[in-house]
Length: 143
Length: 147
Image 1: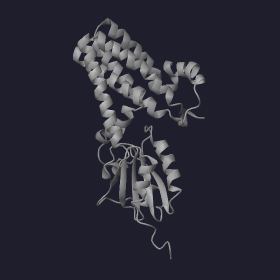
Image 2: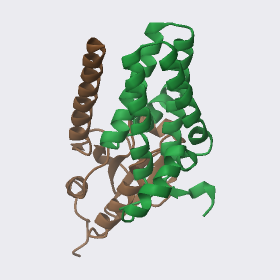
Image 3: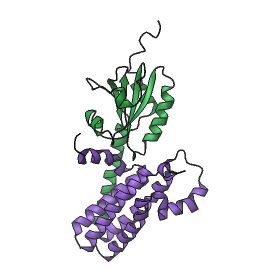
């Protein structure tokens, strides 16, 4: 009896530690080096003049709707940045190409569709801004 | 609103997870035997409507709507019923496996699946973390051949 209670306690402690580790990693902004590109056919929209944020979701992703709504608010502050969504479960080819392991994963693409930053797991608005700031400024904007 | 885009209060499935969490901990303490068989038969019956229809059809969902929701304010956000329904399906599979191992008196199998259920229900209830939903894309990637 006591041994079993101790084992259950250990199991739940491990679950808690795993969750803390997982949530500390989620949304962290990574710079992407030498990544593949996505075309407007992949995105279903024409990319933004400055760039595009792409949310990888699945129909079973609980945090994706919140992430999509947050990104839609954030990109209002950026000129020439569009937003797209890809169902990773339906487009496993793209999910494999970009090594999407979890949803939501957000890629920030430049004007040519090349990924410059990514966030695995639901980002905060601050993390989303940090990732979008990795985009080069709109070229020819001041002319 | 159609079932295709039915939105639910996410606090319902989260609170509901404490039922399988409590019951599976009791079953783990009891060990495989008549008590654990009864508990997992109850859990299978509880998960079944949630796995087929969705979390709004579970007994916990009914308790939440009838007694708890009226005392709470509106939720910060609603969510699709699909992720928690998938979680109920995962719970059903784990519970049914634990039940079968308990009936067959295979202790190891019983403890593994009852332990899985406790682990997942704990994460869902305490941290609002849907383990099955996180595993979904990985499972899909692992089980579908490259195009």
